[in-house]
Image (tube, one colour):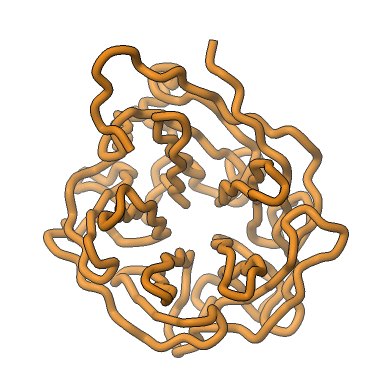
Length: 306
């Protein structure tokens, strides 16, 4: 993956929803809704979905203490994912997991701060394994983890939180073993004029995709669940450098925002079998998501930028 592009710069793209939403997974025995989640192909060649849930039929972050777990043969089939037993029930809050495959194991990072971790061989049985974060500023509020593999032995971790001035930021860390992560810088900053400010940070659910020489960062930019448009506002940024996606200024959004997608905490997935890109959405049960209480999925296309 290129950080510098001598000569001609590759043509960028813009993501766009290309279908209606359809239901993918509903929890039944482990909770009443799914919020931030991750999806990964397991060693059994099935897709696994692991995400925030709660036994209460209303938003209750203090009681989100384990993750719901679904499994399905297809992302775009006629059947919903089957619910398996919940995972990572260790009596602590469990938010927004991400999972990294490495050397026959699966490493999970999740929040809220301080960063927690677990390791598994099959995505079903997990053992706690705390990661080490080096040089992280206290304001980084390591939440909503997402990892992308940069090269053969280098991974980047993105988290959300606040800077010292109370502005939402996305932090980026680097690792060579998926266990120890060194803070590098803020990959995205919001300035004082950005419209959304809240004590937990409005730059939620970072997700980075690499496509055709460019890196695409998606965040759900929200400070409320009372306004469904705000709650489902995912902004997409683009950069040739995965360490720097610029500054978001709500007064001049066209300078950095390349797309707005109606989704909350989306995952972006490419399925070789379907030869298609997909996007998911989820959320609290009061927020009128496409399929109340579950995860929905739609097809995604990448149009060449004009």
